[in-house]
Length: 103
View 1 (spheres, one colour):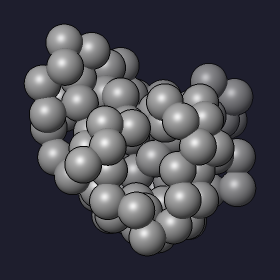
View 2 (cartoon, helix red, strand yellow):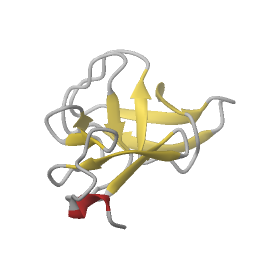
View 3 (cartoon, helix red, strand yellow):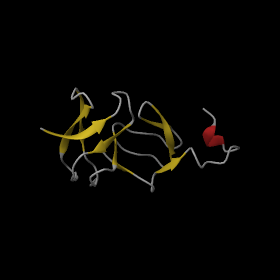
View 4 (tube, helix red, strand yellow):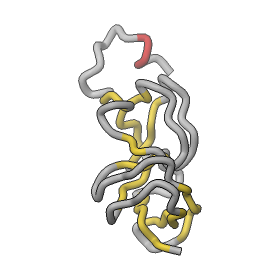
């Protein structure tokens, strides 16, 4: 099994591809310390350095990376899917009155 997804924290919703990943591959996700967290089957290609969903994420769910909220799902995201600007929006630039910011 290839170790191809790096998690900053074991509980993160997304990990980072440490190589180009191809749809259909089953990849190990490991922490910075090398501890295996889970296996993920890719449902889309994910380029090196891009995010991968570790589990299904509902639309509007706040997404955790580095152990903190980095954005919200702009659409439902499947486990093993490429997470990028097409399906995640930053909380940093969200309007302060947006209902998405409410937990």
